[in-house]
Image 1 (cartoon, helix red, strand yellow):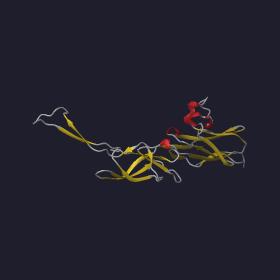
Image 2: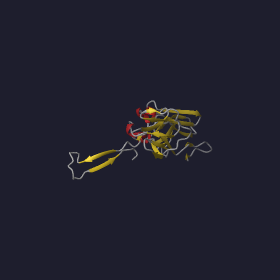
Image 3: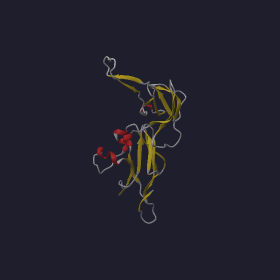
Image 4: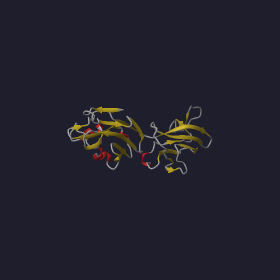
Length: 233
């Protein structure tokens, strides 16, 4: 999408063009948000900002450089691989990073309008989905998928955990194997194990409870309850 402010005569326009109007990434991963920009005057100052962080600014109407925001300390880089192109890289994404991200520049006598639309980032958490399950007498044969509502670009490597121990030899988004009653399974992006999915666990062995639990008199009635537990149920 192009946003133009008219120049003078045949000189180039002041403009900012965002590569993507929206972007989606998984919690714990990284994202690049890019734009190209130009001006018919020398650019004096340029930076990225997020309006959702305006409560941290000295003046709510004056955007401040995202790289100086404590929430992004050590997680933000601004890359300029070529003249007129800027890339904001955010690492170790959290769900609170879901926001609009704008590029702003100033020249002598001109300031890019910071209220114009920019790139919207959505950060989602991983979830373990059950693709297929076959229950046997002593164990369960399962096919599980590490899923995000985003579809990140490129090939990602995953880590699977079984009873909080890494499963060796599995780096894809799919886990296939036997699980036993009470086994706990979760997944994460490789290198970002601290941002793992909520765990799922296989059905536990059924138990039987008797009500009332006091001494039973011959001829009286009792209630037997058979129960188990699993996540997802």
